[in-house]
Image (cartoon, rainbow, N blue to C red):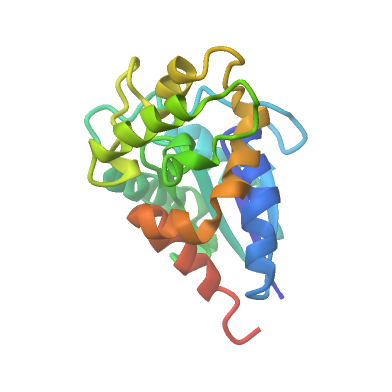
Length: 216
């Protein structure tokens, strides 16, 4: 069995890893442990994400696992500047290599940044937003309309007013969309198969994680 640490930005991503990713990957002989990004492995928290903070956490935990990856949002990085999502992933890898020295390899450390947010994955199937009785078909159709405006859900932009999470908050205001509660539950209803069909960046990452268990 291959041991994989998934460093998560916050509790929403952690819930997704526990409820969706881990049960799927164990079928590929990959045993997943989510680790919540914080000042130390025991601290609960998220947000305020930077390359240095991610690399520092990788450095803390990497010896305990066969492989380490990350699951953090592009939208929230406070030092991404003009970098694209792939460039940001490369920058994390470059700094991790410098920080870990001989302990680094591209197979061992596999940074991943979700473009633009975790919530982009939920747009893969708008009809999955049926957890609250007061949420209407009209609201779900509004999400479908937003989805049709982009080539993929991962292209939904990261403007402070129109990022995926902001759009959900605007659409579902009463009862409101609660990120940590609804996000992982809706993700389970959407399913990884649909996400990988709709979101090419996520699909590539998932396939790479599945391959870690080959030969186990």
